[in-house]
Image 1 (cartoon, rainbow, N blue to C red):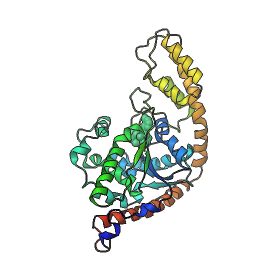
Image 2: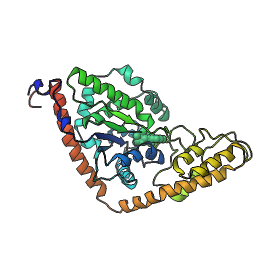
Image 3: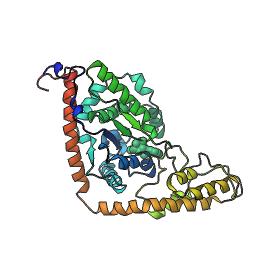
Image 4: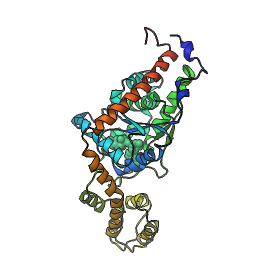
Length: 349
Ligand code: ATP
Ligand code: MG
């Protein structure tokens, strides 16, 4: 049990990894929405064949902002898994695990919390957003440490690539700092992970805010029925200066057109609509009707698949049990290396 076993320069168990590894996940704060899809789910599906993928339901992260709604957590976890499977995440290819079933993560979080200063985490831009969105005057100790816990999520399985939405960029940057710092101080155990962020940026909310969010009451959910989608689209925020159909409208930054660009595969139709909108030659209602058709073409098969999956009562439990088992094995191996590198491997730890 000496620290020599993982002396600097020695290969770590990560040398056993045959493929590059992905770590990504969701907070179980509700059903997933079309923003989650474009931000990260699409990349998960695309990359699950070529990467060894670990997908986490981050239930401990839900505690940072939603202590008032913990009775929903179990249902939210189930919805998260069903939504991911409904868009094509394949549990045969992906290790889908529950954060709280991997006790090595909080231990690694504790160790990482010694490597990073308080002002550094206070500067992370999402902190300000969270305080604003949840009407909080001060963060709890837990909320402040959220991105450090996320570093532990990623590094416990030695993730190389982290497909996430743009709002998570600063968290992956912190993870990179923590990995580098650990590797310098103790032993080169960790990869320095890259984020994979779609170029388009965050999908705006139906209310015109710059981010659609599960907790923000401005989302179109993958599970919404056609009537609900119609209601949300027809009430969507557009160009507020446009009072009549013959007023020239603004396309840039207008959520209705951002959604057209994202979900309407008929590019010629979108271009033509933009031209007419700028010239004041089309009513908002027509632009929205066409958006609704495009969204329905995208959502209908997901909804159908969701219903099939929901009919299998043990499915989610089995997937999470198997994925969490594999995640625990990986996590135990990583933590063993960490303790050795830090000389914390006393008393048989
Ligand atoms: P909450 O409001 O509860 O934080 P959320 O909608 O932000 O929920 P998360 O579970 O925090 O969802 O995030 C899951 C993933 O979806 C992350 O990778 C995040 O970056 C991405 N994501 C969330 N919202 C958007 C969005 N509007 N556009 C693109 N990606 C998004
Ligand atoms: Mg979020």
